[in-house]
Length: 424
Image (cartoon, rainbow, N blue to C red; front, side, top):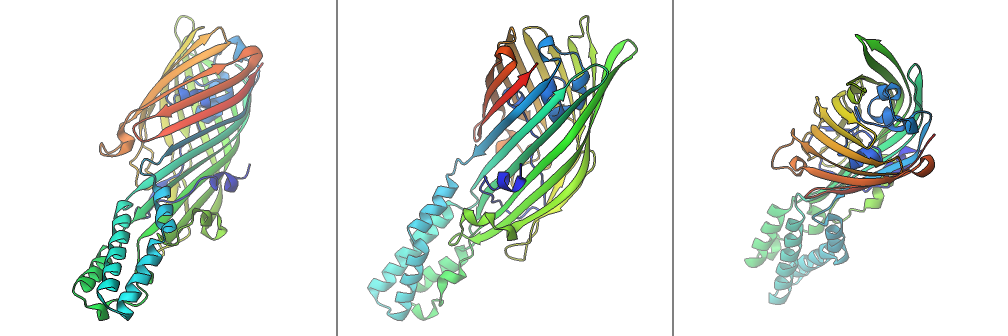
C-alpha cells in the first residue's frame, strides 16, 4: 500500500502555532477497537504485532493456535461538530469575498448613500461569517492493517503492515482590525481612505498539517519458564515511512483538493523497533500480564514551510510504553491497558495518555460480543479529548473465518472499524 494514497483520502488541515506535533496513533485492529483499545495482554495472535509481539508465544485457545491472518482491518474516526468544511464552502459559494470587494470599490469610485450602504452591508456580512468559523476545527484519523501470524510456544513469528493517518482542519480569523477600519471609514463617509484591492488585504486563513506512518515489519517471539511461570518475549523490527503535509491558504482561496499537491509533502524512511514481554499465571494460566515498548528509537520529520513567516512543524514519533492485564476463559476475556508514557498532542489537541478497559464474551468460538471504554487522563479537562470514550462491537467466526465490526463515540467523535480475518 502507498501511504500517500492513504493520507490523501483525508482532508488535511490544522492550526500551525505549535512547533511540535505527535505522529498518528498506533494502529488498532477491529477487536481492540471494540474493546476500548486494549491489547497489550489480550490481543489475539494475528494482531499481536500491533500491540505486543510477545503475545505470539503465550497460550491461546486451540481455535487460535495454528495460523492467523488479518486481510485487512480498517478504522476511521472523525469529528466535525462545527461543520467547518461546509461553512467555508458556503462562504465561497455565496461569493462573499467578491461582493465585499465590488461593494468597497463602488463606494470608493462613486460615493453616495446607496453605494456606501451596500459596502457596509457586504462588509458586515463577510465579517460576521468569518467570525463564525474562527478557531473552528474538524479532524479525521484513519488506520489500515494486515498481518500473517504463526503462533507457537518455542518459536513464533508474524509479518505485518499497517498505515495510519491523522489530519485536522482549523481556521484563523485575522481580519477584525481591517474590516472594523473599513466600516469606520464607510460610516463616516471617509471613502477616500478606503483601501484599493481590499480583498487582497484579507488574512483569515485555513492552515493545514497532516501526518501519516506506514510500517512494514516482522515479529518473532519465544517462551520460557522463570521461577515456574511461563514468560514470553518478542521483538518487531520494522521499516517506517513517514509522510507529512502542511498547506496554508486564505479562506477565500482554500480548496481541500490542493492538499494533494506534492509541493506540500515531505517524506522520510526510518528503521525502528518494538519490544514486548508477557507472563502467564494462575491455576490454569488464565491471567496474562504484559508490557510493550513501541517505537524504541525516536524519529521525526519536518513539514514543508508554508504560510506567514514560512512556518514549519516538526512531527515526532517517540517511545510509548504500555502495560496490560487480561483474564481469559473459554467464554470471556477481560482486559485493562495503561499508557505509562503520554503521547504528544497533534495540533490543537491535548496530550493523550489512556486508561482502557474492555471485555469480550465468546459464544463457543462462533460469535463474540465486545464492549469497552477509555479515558484520557493526560488531557486538559477543557479539551474534548478529556471526555471518556465508549466502544462496542461484535464478531462472527464460523469455521475460522472472522468478520468483526466495531464502533466508538464520545461527545465529539464517532468512529467505526471492520475486519476480515482467518484462523486455522
